[in-house]
Length: 127
Image (spheres, rainbow, N blue to C red):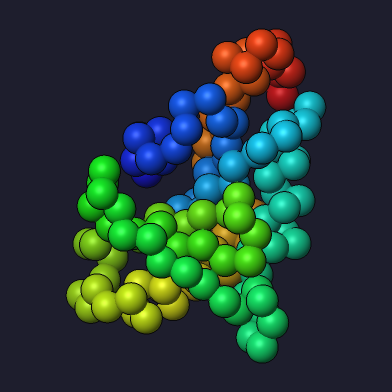
């Protein structure tokens, strides 16, 4: 999953990957990337039906198999691999990706931090 996100994302951006495939891109990285991403996902990850937190959009990928599912925060993305589903219609993919984001928003289990601050002219802050 890490290599997939590396392939899909802007090489200059710092990001944090959570256990169920949700990636938080940090447009303005703080000192502690993991804490910053966890705070964002805690607020914007859980699904709340009837609110913008229940909405989703699907992006078909050209550079990798599968889809990226987005929600109400533009920097929180969830990858769905075709092998995870039998039915690949947009609604099914979207619900599945939204569910993965919801689980990540509750579990908050970080599996990878990609720190690109040094490449942007700022030294990385060690966590």
